Length: 174
Image (cartoon, rainbow, N blue to C red):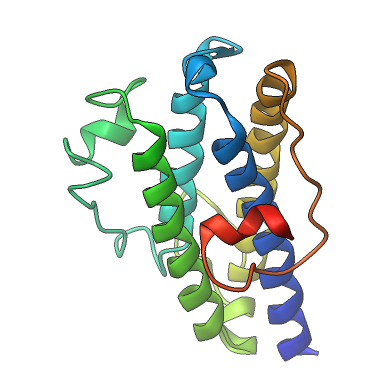
């Protein structure tokens, strides 16, 4: 069962991730600043990306700020707004980064690591539960973003499971 659990967790995270990226890809530039509650579309997407990036790290302390995605370092994720507005190509690049990080993270999981502590002090849960928590977080914001995309005339796709064959660009065909 442990290998099955890892496979199930990865497959459902991958499906949620592909749906999130589909919303990013389908959002017209003219709607990039449309509000999702009180925040612009791009900011909700950025929040989803940096949280995902963080939770895919083995521990909270292992998370590394990337100058391309966090030009102001910790200030980009600790404040209400990052240091600047991010463009669609930049966030799709961040999504590719997270997708690769997720593939590596899931490949490194074992029955022992999934049953062990998640490595995030503010989250009292196992690593397996953190993966579910992370997936739920992606799904929550994907639902918000998909409403903007639908109002803009898009048609976000439902994806049942698994990764696309290779890149973010192939996600729309699944």
